Image (cartoon, helix red, strand yellow):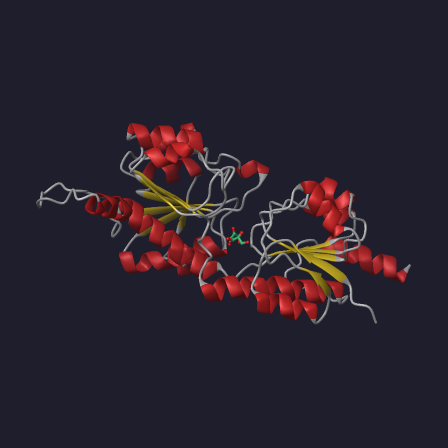
Length: 334
Ligand code: 8YV
């Protein structure tokens, strides 16, 4: 029996590619080339599945141009790179990799908060530049984390994992979300209290963003929201570029209207706004919140599991569009 053909759009752990080749004819990308839209469409001709990442946009145009496609499996929890509605319409299954990265991503959100509020990277640059000549009472003063109010926007699985970690810092947690989460989850999330976005911005000492990107979430934090925040506050974004208006954030950080920021994601990344590089009160990392070796491996295997199930005629574990499955099953029954 001939194996279905698949495309792996980016370089990925060789053993995961090896695993996929037990089931599929795999066109992999070990040199990690970035495909243009036209290259992607050309490579997807005749392919039944695609193992992809958020750096490849699977738009309605790509979907329409690739009639053999049956499954799009993203190696990420976020899937704003995929037009799910167009995929559903075309009867293509779409999957993501939730849960396996919650704890690692929450760990990293804390790394950014601690580094930004306590000026860790700024201190190191200062020290390495030979500026440490004597002790002073006011050298690199930062904000306290312990006992402070933590505001989390987006109380999904990652937001909850961030909130749980605040217990050790005796923090008061408030959150805003599309809707309130069940009380038992709030209790586990350090008794997080649901508040309006305005109250959160006005009263939080530190704000962490953990919401998925959607057109409605675009610029959730813009100039108006930054103006509502405490000037002593820290903003952390481990969610997605576009949730923050980066130009407005640069203006606020430069003017000292916001004390500090820790950013792992950016608008138009990796070509982020170079204005950030002129600021010392921002900690910048290259989209690595999920990048621990075990977690990235788990994400890759999770995406592979989804692809193997989807093309094997089984409902994949992390199916985002069950309507597409129903459509396929309906077609099979005739
Ligand atoms: C990844 C992510 O770094 O899962 C997501 O949505 O943004 C990150 O965990 C990346 O997208 C992996 O492909």
